[in-house]
Image (cartoon, rainbow, N blue to C red; front, side):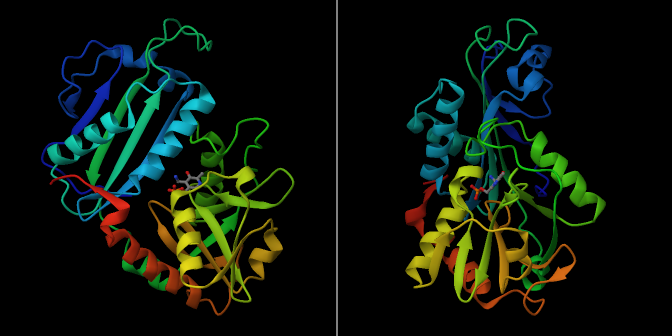
Length: 310
Ligand code: PMP
């Protein structure tokens, strides 16, 4: 994702680092070297959310904050702000960066500054919070008009007994290894399988297949439960489409009538080739387009968002 160049970018940064003003100019050079001791810097010990802004409004903020709070409780990180305080911070940062159109928020909460170089979370101060809020150009139109090619990665998704994919941690090495495979094949996204060989999700998106008019997506056990995924399930039901949370393998993806991905960044992205095999007639499918159009309306509905200005 490409951020539009901004004259001056403010970021929010708070934690055990002795800064008086948490709204920093990104280029001010004010961050102390002690940030190198942060649990996140050393071990990826933190959680995050990627949130979209449409028309100067923060989309599905409540849902993202709910997921953030769930992630924090899974990792036993004590949230240093209330939902209301955090909402206020996001709005202030959005105003400081003058985001009136389309944008993106990256909200990170880490376990905090470490007292030593070990891994024991007992030896950590209070949580660190840092936030970016940027204007964002949308993905190119062709992305949605032509559809994308993806491959199935050999790297399997971390199973829930090791680190639960429901938790959105800052440790993305599992997903990044799959993206490295995608890069070798020049594809923008990759499908990941569970250790049992079932499709679960993509490196940073959820996946749906459409078969005989029914939109199916893998069950929640082995995935990050996407805010966009849930929105699409709701929209599909409202449109009277049949949906299901069902386990399926790579063969069902290859033989699907339509395939699409969902995510805060990609929104609803049609997939027209998987592992070199053409999906349907090689063009974005009818139901995919219907859902994409309905999703675009959903982002314009003020009931789903919180304004930055006003
Ligand atoms: N799965 C993974 C692993 C992700 O990183 C993301 C992006 N947050 C998603 C799915 C999609 O989630 P959402 O719709 O909430 O952006």
